[in-house]
Image (cartoon, rainbow, N blue to C red; front, side, top):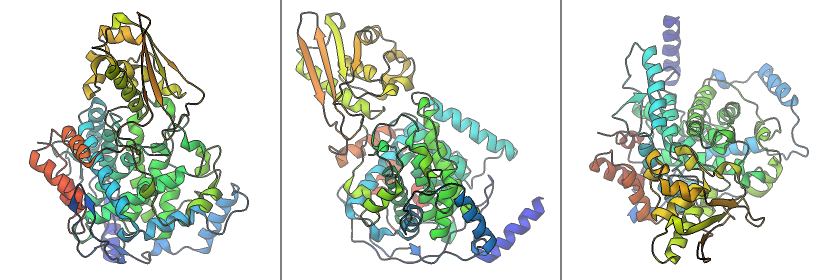
Length: 557
């Protein structure tokens, strides 16, 4: 069996130049040829110019191989598959699936505005930082130990140095798919990662997949940081577009966790972009990824929730690899109620096409991202800022014995209404806990969620005096919600605070300096020289630097 596999791989390598298989000790993935693309003018991030040099991005006709020569029989199978589930009525000539597949295959640096480039670099730096910090958490350590252990057991205890690095580790490496999974878990382990509108965490499923994939693409196939930036933006764009296929997606999620739905699609799109796929392979990667999608919101506030980002990163990467080897998906997967529409009751691909297919500007250009100041659900940022406003309006520190009751007015959302959270992860999803912690301490830090802090007598006493009210005018949307905190004192007086837009929200974004400060605070396990070099590389994301130049800096000492 092994000799047969080796013979097959040798034959493929002769035909296409580079071959990678999906096993732990295999070498990686074929990269497709592209045509030269021009370079955009110099960009600026944190005041530093983008290094300008000849692009090594190549886009063009998809590589023609035996797996791409579709026979009449395979075409008939696809049409039979399509007929099994009805398409929306009045389907326009251009489908969402074909439109997005074209976007994946044709996007170059030229298609990204300077605003989009600037914002995506900030997101990228922030994501690296929260992933490196998140690796230290218990959940990430459990996942790492389990998954790396399984790989080592399959290779007689040997940990291949040819894989991808686990961010924040002491240069522990794993196969690209496993590294994507573990790094994705680390990013979401503390709920410290970015949040977009409509609601999702777009970077956790996307960046680990393309960094791990890029590490496996060696020699002449090794992608530049500019190509990583393009692929990253493709993954973000696909998630944003798919979220706009449903009005219900604009609200705080209650049914499926978006990173596990749109995130896996974004991961597959990003990996397809990095591999240089044409429309057909991109479409198949999306079709495969759709069958990997989905995770219930019931696991919010548990240690399972971070797995959603990790599995989206992993399965998106694997979807692209499988598409590269000829696995097919439904060619209308993003247009069907029994396809991607299965995740949304009000799925409307026709409106998505009508509203966005003619817009060449990426969504990130007009819709910025929220970068978090606190390691908690984004809704908690309104709560914390409202509570801090109360403290600023009080004379002296808050004394629990002087408090009669605390009212938090917030949107209706069951999974973030937790009166007495019993775990760190529940506390990150509790209006009550975050309001009371901010009222008592005047700040919220990663340590605030640890067991010793949660069990404090004064905090527990204040939590028992706190209730959440949900006014009808307070919409469960990160774009429209507000939070008020009312503290009623024993002397009959009331002190209140309100937050309509917390600092870090897309309407009130973190300064460039604070983005770097957050990254620095989150990466204390890294050598100072490495931290500075990471910031420098992310400022440029240049065609003159390889993705491996960045990846080699992501481990601790």
